[in-house]
Structures are given as C-alpha cells and as structure tokens.
Figure 1 (cartoon, helix red, strand yellow):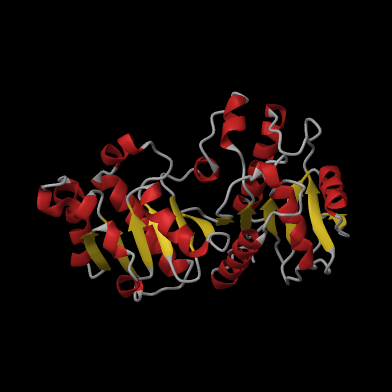
Figure 2: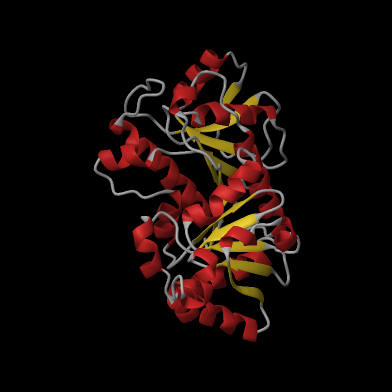
Length: 328
C-alpha cells in the first residue's frame, strides 16, 4: 500500500503542529510526514502531546492511533517559534522536492501540503512563487490549475498569483483553453464526474455589461466558452461574479472558474475557511493542501486548527481510491 506524504512546511509556523494532529487518525494507507524528527518531537513536547514518532522505512501497514510515521529531513538551524529564518528555506524546499519525486516515481500516491512562507524563501535568494508553481515545474507540465473546494463548492482559477494589473493581459484564448481542458479532464478522471457543469465568471463588473465596462468577455472569454459549448460541454458563458455565487446558480454546478485569485476564493473561504482544500489540477499525481497560511503567532500555542489539513488528507485519500496510481 503506497503512502501519502505530508509536508510539514515552514518550521517556525503551525505546519509541524497540525501535522502532529495526524497521529489521532487511523487510515488504511500510511501517512508519512516530511519533517525534522527532532524538531517535531520538541514541538510535541511543547504542546503536551503524547505522540510516538516512527522513522518511516517503507512500512506498508498504517500507524496505530498515537503514532506518526516521519521521514527525517534535517533542519539547517534550530527553530525559534514564530521567527522566520532564511537558513531553513532549503529545508522547506527539500520537503517539496522529495514529495514530488516520490509521487512522480510511483513511490507514493501523492502529497498533502502544510503551509510555507513564500517571502522567506525568496529572501534566501531562491525564486519561489508557491507550491503550485513548484510542482508544475518539477512535473514538467505546461499548465496546472489551482482549485479550492469545500463540501459544496469548487472554485478553479484562470490566473493565480498575479498582481491585479497583470490579470487582463494574462487571460488569453490559449490560457483559457489550457485551463478549461485541465479542469474538464480532472473533474472527469480524478473526481469521476462524467459530464461536469461549469460556471464561468466574467473578468469585469457585470461581465462587461455588453462592452460598456470592458470588452474582454466579448473579444476573449466568450468565444472560447462558445467553442466548448459547441462540443456539448455543459458550460456557461461569462457571468457577473457578484451574482454567480448565489445558491440558486450554484445548486447544480460542479465547479466555478474564476478569472483571478481574489474573485472566487473570498467567496469560497467565507463559506468554509478551515474546511477548504487546495487541489492542484493538471499534475500527474494527487496534490492537496490546506487553505491557510503559516500563522506564525500561533505556532506552539496549541491554538492552531488542524481541520483543513485533515480535510486535505481525506480528499487525497479519496482521490487515490477513485483514481489509483497505475503502480498500485
């Protein structure tokens, strides 16, 4: 039974705290946390958790409740809670590298990720824009799609971490075709939705209002959407984002495509912050993540909520059952 790897993320944040909570679980498939095992033990002691950390050596059985498999990744410097240190940037990236390598080489079914701090990795002189882009480059795929999901809503993004002023130029017919191809493909294959219904946000207020508030819908977005509709895909034309997310519109939708990060994600997170999952579509393996950041001020306090990590792990395990790796 191949494991699911879980990266512990930024060591000065809550990533190690929430990973320790995985010891409460009993899963058929082994969960393996990538972390410095001594740091993880220190964090458990600080939190008053009675967790047995087991060095992972390819065990095929799941851990018992109160146990946690850990693959040791050594820190460069000891951690001061809540204080970022660029010396440990390479430690964070090594977690991502190993998790991607194991998934690509068929040694795992995929990865669930705890949060990282992009700024400190860049301060270390390493160009890094996020997990999504890292896994895309490692896998060598032309395009991936970020999708966040709650129990009742899935929101995919046409663009991800771009300044708002750069978004209109980035929304090209080529990009939209790539994003929609991936979204449709993964809804069918990973989520087993045979004929997904997709709602699409316009870029401009009121979806451009017939060109009076912008022409991107008329000149770029709708022609692409029409091409899919002509092929029988159940997809809307561009809709005003301020009314698209009403319960009446969403009741039969399998996914929403938003044009930019802060168009769709605030709505989704307002519905289920702490219960949402970030999924990277378009990768040749499963990757899910928490919907929150490193919460440096909460590290080691016992106040960090681990619910999003557990939902991310649950979804990754579900997807592994739905569309198992060919090596299984």
